[in-house]
Length: 486
Image (cartoon, rainbow, N blue to C red):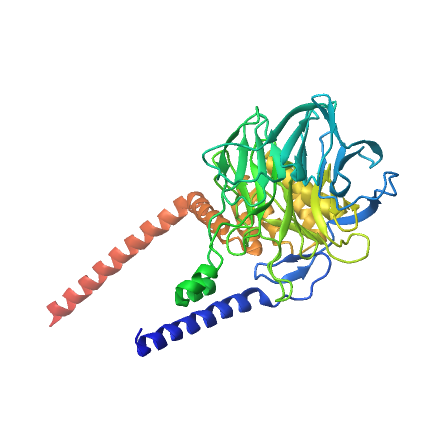
C-alpha cells in the first residue's frame, strides 16, 4: 500500500475513533449521583422520586429450616401463590407457600423404576396445572414432572438439520406456552430460543438477536493483517440472558446487547413487537459510569396489564415499565442493607409483591408496594382495562406524590383526549413533553374551535370581504371625481 494511502487510512480511523469515543463518552459515561429511588426526566437526567417498593422481609434456607441454599439460580410463583426456588447447588427444588413457609422439597424423580436426580439445574417453569419443567443443565436435558412430581417426559439430545453435528444441549432457562410448547434458552446458542413441540421434539429457533458491530472493532479489523484477523473474535449475535411468557403466549426476553435492544417481546414468528413509546427505549439505567458500564439485564418478569420488571445484575436495580415502554419506577441496589443485594439473579411477582433471589447469599428479599407504587400500578391497570377516568384519578394522586412524574401527566392527557377534553389534553401533554400526542390533541382542539365558532368566523370573513369591496369602490369613485375635476 502506498505511504500516502496508508496515512490517509490511519487518519480516517483516528477520526472515527475520536468521534465514537466522543459520542459514547459524552452521552452516557458520566452518571449523576442518585438516590436509591429515582426516575429519568425528559432530558435524560436522574431525578429523585418517592420509593415505589420497600423491602419488608428476608428469607434464606436456614431460616426456613431447609438448610442453606447453595447458589440458587431461579424462582417462580404460580397463580395460587406457591413459590418454587431452584436451589441449584443442592440440586433440588424447594416449594413454599405464599407466606414463604416450606411445603416440600423435590430432589429427584423415578425414571423407569430407577431414582434419578438433578445436576446443577439452572432454570424452572411451572404451568397453571402444576406441571414442573426443570432445565437440568448438568445432565443436558429438560425434565417434565406432573402435578404429583411424577415424570412425564425428558427432552434431551435434540436432533435436527438446523443443529450442528457436535451440538451439546445445555438448557439454562425455559418457558412453556398454553399449547405445551417449550422454549429453551440454551448455552452457546446464538440462533435464538429453541422451540420444542408438546411431545418434546425439536421444531425450530425463534427470535435470534441481530448482529451489532462495534465500529471501532470493525475499523481495526479492516486494518489488521490476515493473521491478526484470524485471531480476532467473530461478529456473532448476542445470547439471551433470560425469558418469561405472558398469558397470551408472548415471550419477553433480555439479552446482553449494548448496541441493540436489551429487552424484547417476541410473537409466535419470533418478531420483536415490544412498544417503545417512552422518552427512552427500555434498557435499564440511562446513565452509568465508565467503571460500571451499562446495565446488564439478567432476568425479566411479566406481570398483569402488560407491566414488566427487569433486574440489573450490575447495580442490583429493578426497573419496571408499562406496556407502552414508559419507565414507571426504579428501586433496589447493591449493598448490605435490607433491600440491597450481593449477586441478584432472579425476579418474580407474587401478587403485587416482588421477590428477588440473591445467588451468592442464598437469600430471597420480599418487596411490597408503598402508597406511591400502589397508585401507579392501579393507574396502569385502569388504563389497560379502558377505564380512562379512573386511570386519570390515580395519575392525579401520583402527581401529588411526585410532581416530576412526566409519564403521569401523559396518562392524564390520554384520558382527557379520549373523553374529548382537548384543551386539558393539550395542557397535560405539554407538561409531559409528549410531542406526538400534543400535536394530535392540538389538531383536534383546533378543529373543535373552528367548529364551535364557524358561524362567527364566516360572518367575520364575509364582513371583511364586503368592507374590502366597499373600500375599493370608494377609492375608484374618488379617483374618477379627481379626473373629472381636472
